Every structure is written in C-alpha cells, then in structure tokens.
Length: 250
Ligand code: NAP
Image 1: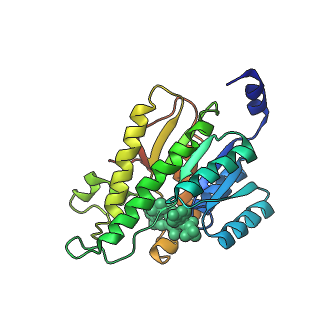
Image 2: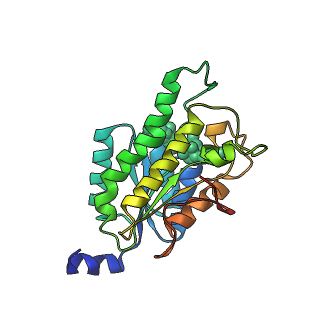
Image 3: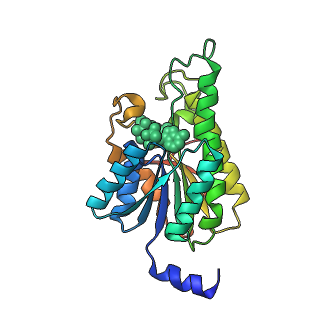
C-alpha cells in the first residue's frame, strides 16, 4: 500500500460487502454494520429487492450502495468487484451470506441431484468465486475480515452426536455447509501469514424466507455472529466456527 492510500484509508469509514443482503439475515448484517458507521455494499441479484433494501438502509442513516451480484455467475461477480472498487476503493469486510437450501425433499436415497448441485454452486463455489474476486480489495485494508455464513447443520461433529439439534436429513443443504466449513479452514491456512482473518458463523435457527419463517430467532439476532466476526479486532481468531454462544465444533 502506498503512502497516499494509507492516508486515505485512515480517514475513511470501514467498507463491507454483504452478499444476499436484500432480505433476511444479510439485510440485518448490512444494517448492523451500517449502524456502526460502516459503508455497506448491498450485494443482491434481485434488483427490486436490492434497491428497496438500499433505500431502507439509507433512510435509517446508513451509507449503503447497491451491488448487483449473482454469486453463481463469473461475469456478475467480476462486475461486482469492479463496482466496489469504484465506489469504495477497498474492502474491510466481506460477508459471504448468500445461500439457498436447494429446495426439498433432500432424502439422500431419492434426491434430485440437481438440488445438491444447486446448493453447492451457491453455498460453496459462490463463496470461493466472490472471495477470490474481492481479495485484491480486501488486501488494501489494514484489517481485512472474511465471514462465511454457514450453519451448525454443517457440523459433522454435531451431525454424529446423538440428540444434537441438526435439523432434518438433508443431503444438499447440510453437506453444502460442511463443505463451506472445510473451505473456510483451507483459506485460513493459506492466509495464516497475512492480516486477513476468515471465520465461519452460524446465525442460529432464524425466521426468514429460507425456512418459511419457522426459525425462532429474529433476523437481527441471526445477524449478530457475522457482525461480531466482521468487526473482530486485529489478532482475533481465524479459521474457526462461531455462533452466539462461542465456538461451534466443525
Ligand atoms: P433468505 O432470507 O432466503 O436470504 C437469502 C439471501 O441469499 C437472499 O438475499 C437471496 O437473494 C440471496 N441469494 C441466494 N442465491 C443467491 C445468488 N445466487 N446470488 C446472490 N444472492 C443470492 O435466507 P437467510 O435465512 O437470511 O439466509 C442467509 C444465510 O444464512 C444463508 O447462507 C443461510 O444458509 C444461512 N443460515 C440461515 C439460517 C436460518 O435459520 N435462516 C440458519 C443457518 C444458516 P435473492 O433475493 O436474489 O434470492
């Protein structure tokens, strides 16, 4: 980083990009970071919902800008990275929140394999695609953070613990989060000697479209772990999995 950009970053607010920020947990992550004074890129593919989220955030005093983004599409992700560069010049936190269940039913013996493919494409490959496209901007930050929004249903430890709460049998969604957890560990290992901290979080069972609003936590509560890890101070954890109560076993 040259002297000029160091001077610039010292006086500028922190900048975050939240994927899937037009509703649900992602919207509340954007709102929470915005309330802390961050500038927030609202990454979302649905234009109407993206624009109304940006308007709502701005009305609440948040410095928000819309970022058209389909995490499954190379060109869209490349354009999103370019837009963030134009708008903000760097990125301090990337929150990979966009996710899908893949739809149901997901019994392993009868599943439509396209459900598995779709869940992995969005929840895993989408995260890798977005992270790598945004890494050059993250590297310009003095304290870059990456947060991957996973789920405790992806914990193999919990899945194999009798009596643990891990949702229904689901061969697309749950293993896609296991895969995402494994990917998070690999990034943490490669980036261990850098100032980039990368962690996975579980929002808890949260009332959103994803579960037809069956969840028991509010989207604000679901957003809390991601906000905490996006703003964790230098020297904080990397390569771990957290929920509101602390570490979640892989
Ligand atoms: P949600 O309300 O359905 O929101 C999902 C978001 O992801 C939407 O903004 C959606 O955008 C976006 N998205 C999906 N596919 C995308 C793509 N290809 N490109 C860009 N954006 C895409 O669900 P949520 O509950 O807030 O979920 C947020 C994250 O939390 C997910 O990763 C989910 O797996 C995780 N999670 C949720 C719970 C829970 O209980 N709700 C529990 C554990 C983990 P569109 O509007 O364009 O579809």
